[in-house]
Length: 79
Image (cartoon, rainbow, N blue to C red; front, side, top):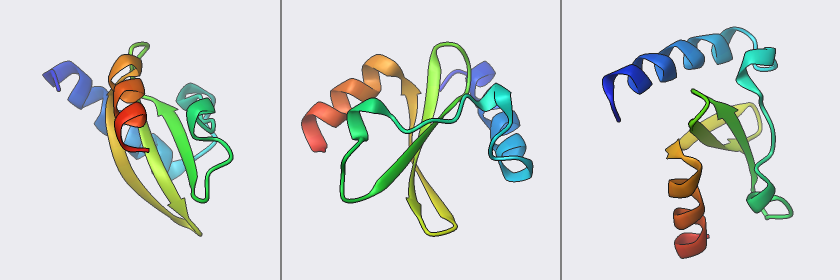
């Protein structure tokens, strides 16, 4: 990731640890991952970049950070 996106991701991660529902995170369930056996959430890193986590109880496992196009390609191939 470009340095500016890394800085933004670090900032958003800290914000997430303080308030998972902060409006600037734009937290949601990714449309492409609805109705799966596992639960996933998506948060905004920048206007172009997103981070996706797999949710297990109170634990979040960050599995992706990248653009929407990158995410769509990964979902199509692996999920």
